[in-house]
Length: 278
Length: 172
Image 1 (cartoon, helix red, strand yellow):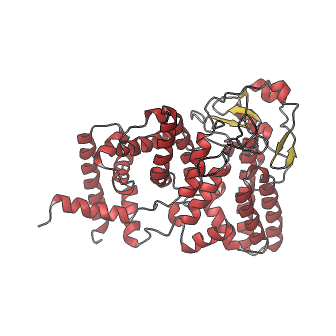
Image 2 (spheres, rainbow over the protein chains, first blue to last red):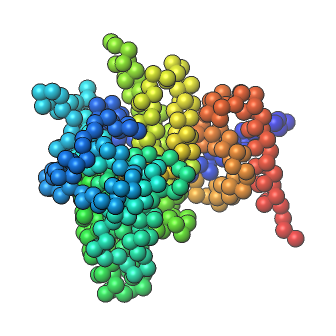
């Protein structure tokens, strides 16, 4: 005799088999994440350290071995509000040290990673009406985009929706986000050109994509950046599958067209490609 | 060991034990690895800040963590624009380690039927079958009583069954 419980169990089993997301074993990634959150530099909704804006704007900061010019803060952006008057509390090497200068480590020997990495740029309250003007001012408009998108559209894609509580982030983080979104646009153009067999357009799109991506290099940890560099080399060699796989996982513009990026799209070949790249 | 140190150790243990399930909760609802990784990082930050509130019981702690993830999701998928290196690594690892799963015709049909249900029905079914929560945990996450959660689950199952039957019925 079939009971209600049997029917429920059967339906539950059906649903379980349809689960698109098996829980992966991420212990070695979760450990440093926990360590990061436990570090004194972990992000807070309202960052604690406050540095006078006028003084900070004249500074230069060192990130990932490269000297990076401080962000130019336009008078318009300052007047429009949105700056919190505080700064990301990154460190020179992105690690947390004690008073004696020694790197703090977990019991497992992993270094405590500063939540802001090397970022010490001014913080922006993304919930402030002035944030949109700030983001618009941070866009690297001298960088070429595909002809189907403008920097204003990139800015719009990065600007939070009104009415949300998007939190606080750093100006440099926003600048990187703008570049990531521009790289995504070039990635779409590359895929279109590659599919069409248009070699000239492939070359142009590759330069745009790799150039925008390389401009974000200092925001990646070395290990992850090596994966990006490998992807760039694969694509330079004409590996359309690797490019498509990466786009399906992450591309902002492809996601807008729907259906891409769902964990269900990950298959064995994709997983292998991902493993190869990382 | 100080209270703070005990709390820190407990967060470490709980995140490593339940982290994949919390991440899975977010991934199933965003349908996107990168956003799931971002949201997971934010959830973790909130869990860390509120570690003094963690329930002593592990089952309750899991429901509490899923509840934090749910609030993080509700507060805005794009709450953090900062591209953190660890978040990116987490995203990459998710891509690498997530195996092919649930792509049979039957699974597609079940997912499609689920997607046609009202959101509150979908949510209670996912919490039960996909997130693997008990009735009490489902109630805790949804902020309702255990009897109410059971009732909601029963109704949702009935609607899903009906939806599957309708689609399975022979067409004339």
